Amino acid sequence: MSTPQLYWLGLDGQENVLPLVASEILIGRKGDADVVLNNQHVSRHHAKLVKTSDGYSLQDLGSTHGTFINESRVEAQVLKHGDKISLGKDRIDLHYFIGEAKPA
Image 1 (tube, rainbow, N blue to C red):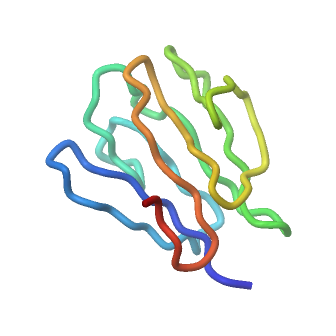
Image 2 (cartoon, rainbow, N blue to C red; image 1 turned 180 degrees about the vertical axis):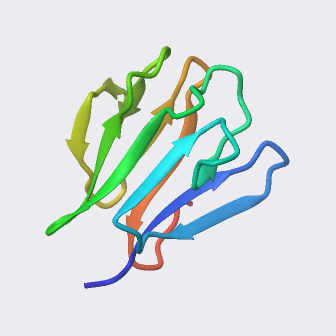
Image 3 (cartoon, rainbow, N blue to C red; image 1 turned 90 degrees about the horizontal axis):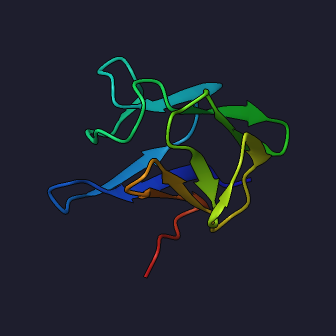
């Protein structure tokens, strides 16, 4: 199976790609997160990705402004290739891919 990846554009417009290999990946605004998103509507510890036998699942960590997959608010959900993860009121978008693909 190909390595899952997380893809997003930074505030500066720079493309970011994170190969997912750890058993847990913390996403949030605080500096100790694995994916740091500097946005006031992203909680300090907003969500985490958890490795499963089938790939990764996304879990909201009680965030103030919510975690969304493909525009639906979720508490926890298994990710599929091409899923769009949106965080917070400003909907910071991350994309989950298996293999080398990224959004067009």
